[in-house]
Amino acid sequence: MANSFRELILIALEEGHIDEIRQHGERDYPFECCGLMLGRFDGGRKNVVETYPISNAREEAAKRNRFLIRPEELMRGEKRAREQGLDVVGFYHSHPDDRAVPSQYDLEHAWPTYSYIVIAVEKGHAADLRSWQMESDRSRFNEEEITGGLLTPERNNHASHHHHTHAFATVRRRRI
Image 1 (cartoon, rainbow, N blue to C red):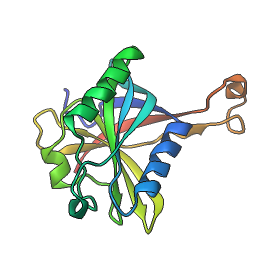
Image 2: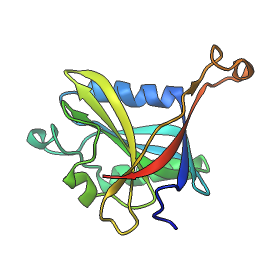
Image 3: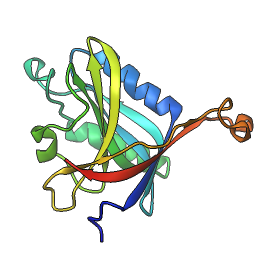
């Protein structure tokens, strides 16, 4: 039942990682930003431990609606992950003045298993942030719908003695 709509996947991001992705999108606007998410696969769960920003290698004219990660940059990111005892668990990129939905280009250049976070950056300001995972037959993306909230000391007294606040996002597959 791998394609069941009831299948639950869990992705965990620290609040700071979401902020880093948003800031990277704003900084690179009006061009697309891109980066890696380093962490651990734990069954159906992905735990993001670090974001790894990468410069967009596309030629100037295409940077507004395409991103390209050079092989040597990907290898550096994978090396960084290995040194930390981590894996690349996903990728993120921005869509300047567009929706946080993967494009056909994104579908053609993605791999199953990984999470793909897309951040909409509207007029230089980070807006909607959504996560996606490719169907195993590579036919489409399923949205990893974020249904959880940020665990902050104000919202969860138990978290107040921890160093980091976390955003735990329960995600449900939805076909697009």
